[in-house]
Length: 475
Ligand SMILES: *[C@@H]1O[C@H](CO)[C@@H](O)[C@H](O)[C@H]1NC(C)=O
Ligand SMILES: *[C@@H]1O[C@H](CO)[C@@H](O)[C@H](O)[C@H]1NC(C)=O
Ligand SMILES: *[C@@H]1O[C@H](CO)[C@@H](O)[C@H](O)[C@H]1NC(C)=O
Image 1 (cartoon, helix red, strand yellow):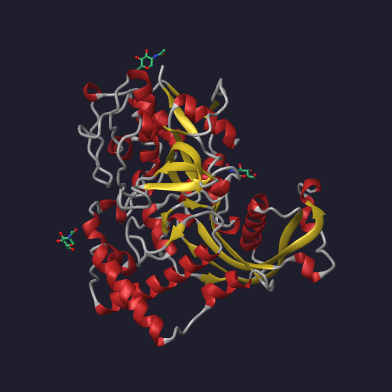
Image 2 (spheres, rainbow, N blue to C red; image 1 turned 135 degrees about the vertical axis):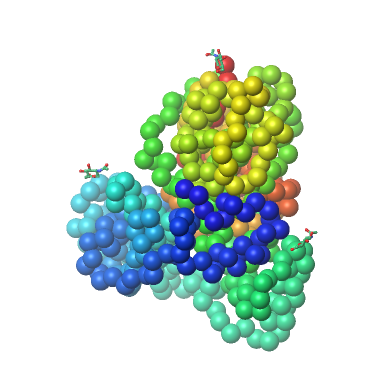
């Protein structure tokens, strides 16, 4: 499935593109998450809404720390949009029931709410569920919750709702926005577009404040090159929500456990197994970068030689995946095995849009023989990584849009581990000022994060980082 973004490979084309994206109402091959059908309001008893709520509730509960099963107490609004299936947007209230999670499996809808309202810890949540009926597939695209009443967390709720800034802050905002435009070389096609981008920038700065004020680690969030994009635009251009569907894929072979316990700290960058940070551009090809990074490490371990391998080969020739529209590492390994190997970056260079497959057996620089899935225990992942090489992983990237540096430890409500939408490479792990971290090689250029790297808190399965770890095997 090709997208409009996929044809644009230069970051310079960026501004033009944003305009294009926004002006885009319809088209022969519009993006999966674009805006084709207009939203239709739905009644609370609509069967599709009920099914979507059941699914969202299930995912919500898997991710929540609550001991009690929580369920929807009130539907505030519901709408749907036809987007290659149906995308439901549902606003609800959720509260705790008397049923303990450990004791309920299926009959959850019959659980009564806790009698005392304050113990229900009511939240207001926005869910977006993408339902593809003909594939029996549902994906939770968005889950945004905030406490409905709780005083202590009021700032979570308050910050995104503040409006009408005093004049002084507006000047600061304008200055910040101007600095952003200069630093990242942005120009906008019209006055109207600049105004719109400024408002988005302003909203994003509020999100930054929220993330920052609730940060549990040492991360700094702030202006990044993605600061003029809405969360949805960012997701559509750079992320890969299809990763959430990996559960419906076939199981991979399990990796044999590491033979030694994990050393305190390890980083494959110190051992020559990691190529420089690359840039996927405006193409949802993170899965390809994650996989080449892994194979570069595996090939280094086999041959002692560090090659930079071709993502474009995967974008063009991996028919199991969807090029800039997203993909799964598990499919990519299989595709490379079928093709018979992978070329180098130099021989088959990155353009960031799908082209005809130009693979030639004569230029194969590395091969793989199979692939494995790692255990989901972070200690075991660390031990495996130290022994075997950098690991392909995936995570919920919500906190990444505005990340600048430090060890990121967002609140779990910002980072549902079941909404995985970005694939990356774990190159190492360690501790910084007492905070354990994963060192994550990203594919958004060296001007992202810490020289292209993102550091994420390690040890609480944060953002689902432990859920989708895998590696190629070279015999
Ligand atoms: C979808 O699920 C239903 C009920 O679980 C089943 O009867 C049907 O065959 C499934 N269809 C596909 C395409 O998997
Ligand atoms: C900034 O963008 C313009 C066109 O939008 C381009 O011609 C110029 O080379 C860019 N400069 C840098 C430093 O990227
Ligand atoms: C691994 O794959 C390569 C390339 O396909 C092949 O030449 C080699 O024999 C395989 N090794 C094993 C042990 O199967």
